[in-house]
Length: 199
Image 1 (tube, helix red, strand yellow):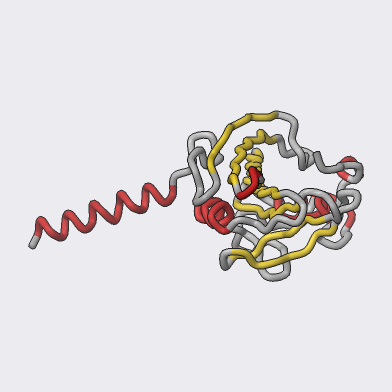
Image 2 (cartoon, helix red, strand yellow):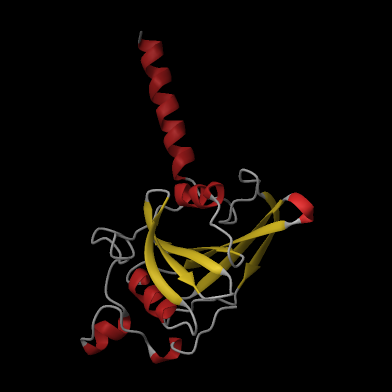
C-alpha cells in the first residue's frame, strides 16, 4: 500500500512538471493534427514592440496539403518579453492601432483571445500569457485550426477575460504605460507604437 501511494505521488509530480514546462524554443516543433511542422526561426525584429519591454520572437510554420495540391499554411509567433506587467494592455493598444485591421474579442478552445482581421489579408488570433504574446496566423478565408490553437493554448493559457483585457489576477494585468502616465483609459497607446503595421 505504501509503495502504491509513493508511485501515485511520483506520477502526479512528473505530470505536473511536464504540464508546466515550455518548449525549448517556445514554439511547438512537431506536427499538430493534420498540420505538419516545417520550420523554426528566431527574430529580434519584434512585430509588437512595447516601449521599455525588450523581447525576442520565435516563429514556427505548419502546413496541410489538401485536394488538388492545395496547401493551407499556419504560422505561430511567440514573442517573449522581459516582463509581464501591463503587457496585455500595451499589446492590445498596439494591435488596435494596426492600419486596416479590426480587433475583436472571441472565444476559442474555451479561452478568450483577440481576433485581428482585415479583408483579403491574413487572419490572426492573438493572446497574452504572462510575459508572452502568442499569434496564430492563417490565410484569408481560412479557419483557425483547432489542433494548432488548442496546442498553443495548452502551453500558453490566455490571461484575457471576456472583455479582452487581462484578468485582475493575471501576470500581464495592469494599465498601459500611456494610461498610467496621463490618466487616460487603460487602452492608451504610446505614440511610438501608433505607426506599426503588420508584417
